[in-house]
Image (tube, rainbow, N blue to C red):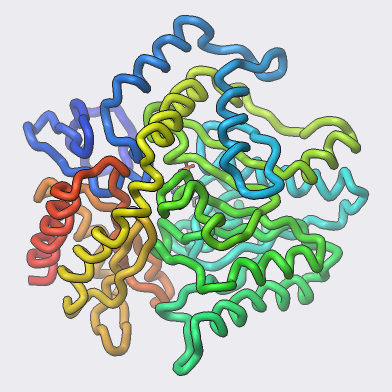
Length: 440
Ligand code: PMP
């Protein structure tokens, strides 16, 4: 009998024993091909000695020093590295331990930023429906996944939501992608004007939407228009790259491909690649300066902020990513993975859309391709795909936004950047077998 409070209150998942490269070994003797890195986490593959050794060395030398008293060498070095590769204007890094904490931190930072500048009326946050920003209460309130929000509605502070930029379902007949991008971005301006521009603090969005919609990249020009609108009304732009950042899309940060620099950006998952939990908030020099010129400090902080061992693990991870040219490799191999998916599923009667960037791809599953009608929520399709795939030794990440019938189920693939072509082929082939069983 297990005393762990598992995700399912009715069953205990298989025991994971060890992991190497693209595989996790179960105590059941099976090798599971990790096509999703858990939740787009394990980007350098499992079992890298160099990271384990960096973690052990840091734990021996300096396991913990509270950030109220000290900084640490790995936090300083990692911040230097992150700022060096960041979009224009980013100058500071605030370390936390998870994506949800990074989002909470970003929202609070935006709130205090406006107070520091003498605009305390700016308290409204705008985000998008069908987004996911984390499960803590502030992040959940920002998120637009109705399924995850419903049970906690009474605890959520009011935030404002606009429709996502979601070409597969949002683009009108005869509209170009650029026209759609502009139209979708203009929803933000309308919301700001409705709420009252002098009361809006921040707009938060995932650059490429992950968990809730499944690898949805923005329409061309969408984020440059969003940037213009934020600037026009003094609203901070927070990009949540917890899932799509750190090389996942074939760019170190997904926003670099959009030519857009946020004021604040959240990271986690691939930053530490799962060796230890670590999240980060990248902050523009302009935002930081408001704190320096104002009260002098951010009214925030948690016991394990900037944990030296977590930073040392992430530093070793990011050193590997750079030394092995893994982001460049993801970009170069993107057409190979896309080709495999299109060859296997472009004609599949229940695959409505194949979309993604880099090593971040999703298949949207529909009951009917012509009408794009999703499967009914009660069919629990994404969950069934996940379970069936695991039976076949494949780990893929399910997603469903079906609560209101507006969004289909999807399955997300986020393989390690180190996966071989043979492993990518095996992932796609096992996914095909999974669909054969589920849609039988
Ligand atoms: N933001 C995004 C875009 C995410 O995908 C996630 C996690 N799936 C989070 C925030 C929350 O991260 P965590 O689970 O580490 O708290």
